[in-house]
Amino acid sequence: MEERYIVGLDIGTTKVCAVVASVNDHNQVNILGVGKAPSDGLNRGVVVNIDKTVNAIRSAVEQAQNASGITVRAVNVGIAGDHIRSLRSKGVVTISNPDNEITMRDVERLLEDCQRIALPSDQQIIHVIPQEFIVDGQDGIADPIGMSGMRMEADVHIITGLVSAARNMYRCVERAGFEVADLILEPLASSYAVLDDEEREAGVVLVDIGGGTTDVAVFQDNTIRHTAVIAIAGQKVTDDIRIGLSVLEDQAEKLKREHGIAFANLITQEEILTVPGIAGRPPKEIKKSVLANIIQARVEEILEIVGIEIQRSGYANQLSAGIVLTGGGSLIKGICPLATEILGLDAKIGMPRGITGGLVNEVNNPVYATGVGLVMHALHAKNVNHAGPRTAADTEPQPKSGFKLDEFGKNLTSKVTTWFKDL
Image (cartoon, rainbow, N blue to C red; front, side, top):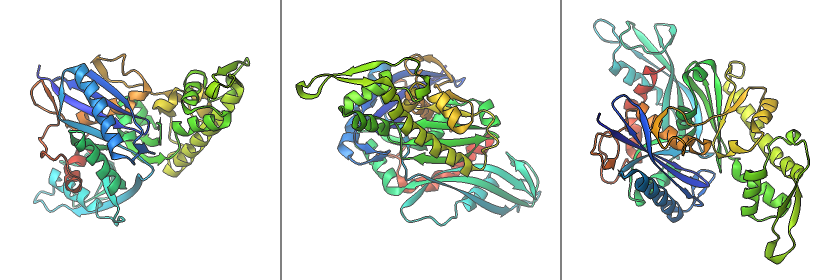
């Protein structure tokens, strides 16, 4: 079998994660290498220090290269941040073919028409995702190609982001020595790793709680219906612990990971936690219930904002599959019962799935949901390479300077046509 290679690069606020995977002719995914490096060059998903981000990217990719034996050339990069916006748009075209049969070119023209929207000069379209097609007044059509009609309309979900944020992300990747094969919204990528087809069809909310941002995506009838990025996440929880208990940041992070509980009602027996004193001072004793109350207050705030986004989506009553929590922030104990109480939805933790071999155990963690999801998204979009066994890259060779942002909008139509085929 011929092996192809995909690299996912999750550039987060607290960590940079690189995942190198191989794909065989049966589209089976094997994880060959994983790399992770601490990141302090971003703030709420946006690059604020180029050099620190470049070093973190280089370190994470080098780890993945060493583990896999694959030389990485191009990467699929995730983007998030509270600058992300989503909106709905409609478009319409007439079918002028002699037999009135709808072709791929007609769909491309329609999607181009949907992108004719007024955007601020600092915003750039990142994704255009078809919701449904309407042919001569008949709605609910997933794939109109081959049908007959005189008039075709489309309802699409458009995701935009700051031009400067995207350019800085490209600049960091290119300075690290790699090309950008694609730029993908992180909650969209995570959904490929942790959601199955039944959940997408029944209706589900994906909540990816990272370090700097919490990403929300609502799916219903196999289509993404709403997206949002919340600028409150795991780092805020750590900050609350640090300030509330007067401890160091490393101590706060350790308390959160090892002893943190998001739902104080789950504590059946009080426990005293001991933290080393600062600069030779006596050790500090902390009640576990106090720690839990601090964590719960912030996690409740996050979940309440998620609830607002669910209501804003218009699909609050159509989410039979409930809520799937993923990302590093979902590892706090008790977060699922708290989410059920706050949102009134069944909740579970989403782990990366769909991997057939390789470092399966190493990535069986919500922390790697976005990294693995970027690989899955690239496979879905056929953005994989046919290079030799020593190079991981994308299908179509990019210019030496990488995938340019100003070319991104021009290539959107060819990219989005892959979406409706799988509805």
